[in-house]
Length: 314
Image (tube, rainbow, N blue to C red; front, side, top):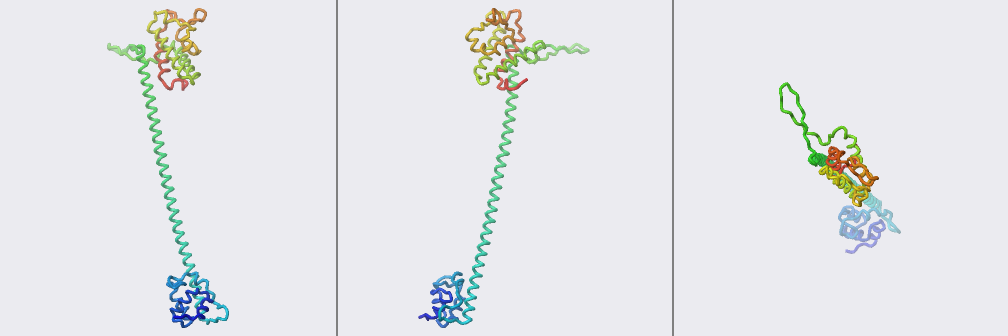
């Protein structure tokens, strides 16, 4: 069917696309402008400007009610055009609101997801922190137990070194005669007369270790050598060669003599400087087995085996 070009022109002048105007006139029987606009209103959701799909709001919003040139339209046509424009604006506004609502829902959902993820991260961090603290406490507890075991083991070892473990009879007085009960003597408890010497020995070895803490190998070698000298005298008190040390001896100098504290420790054990200070000697009549055994079994043994020796005062 041929379309009236004049009416197409009028519809174009009102703002409709040419394809849409042609489709409206063809579908309405090409009878009048009013019929074409009525058809557009009735089919606005199914017809586009090309006559195939729904009509977009942009096609309606741009309608110009006033015709251009000599084309004249009736008042009813203008009202229809205005109605289409209002509908288009309303539809566009509703679509914009719907889109905004969808975006707001998406923002809320994303916010909830982010909050949930943050809670999971915090909970995970808290769980790890608690587990770490628990592990640290258990490790600290094991370390304390190991130290206690080590100290107890050292004490037992000291009791057996050089036959130091002794038992002294402690009489128990009753009205009736009873067997005497023996009480073990703590090897750390020596006669009062040796208390000062014991303190000096311990402080002497501690000072040696602290002053030369950067060369622990030589310090340990000095302790071992001192233990050998002391044990030799304890095991062979009648042998003069074990009670006399030549200070200038290269081996002695390398292992003990180079340390001021080493010489001092031997003097605390009873060695004396003789022959112009060239030798250290314990006269046979001055050999004090109590002091020597204490020096070997307690102080030197502790210095060699206790990893914490010298780290604390007292």
